[in-house]
Amino acid sequence: MKSLFNYTKFIPYLYFIAITAYWFTVVNRTEGLTAYPILLFGIPFLWQILKPNKKLNFTLGITFVCISSYLILAFVSDTLHIVSLSYSIKQFMVYGGLFIFGSLAMALWIIKNSLTKSV
Image (tube, rainbow, N blue to C red; front, side):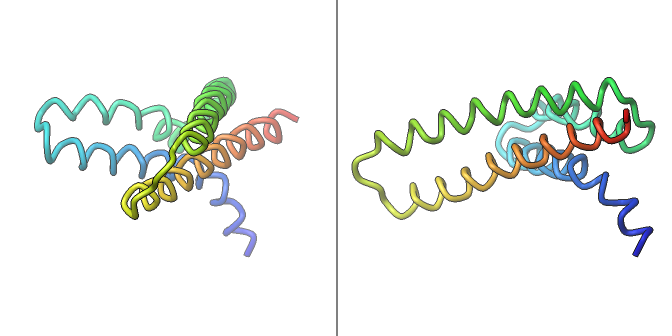
């Protein structure tokens, strides 16, 4: 059980790597070679798994908290102005909302990990 807790600190990084890989595959199907720069977004998270750095960890956490906060504001703003919703829009909003709040939770988890390592 103790070894399981050692690996929980990698969950946020694996989440963002999985999101990057999914984004790459979706864009690669339509755009082709121009999708490969998307893979660069996964490098800092992979680096944190292989060779952790406290400053990079805290910077990633703060950056993604800011991005997620902005996305939450945009998501709430969008939901308040839509009058008629079709099923596909409702489904997209549910998945988008889960992604946004999941990203915020993972970013806060990264910050928590960086603060507990520095104490």
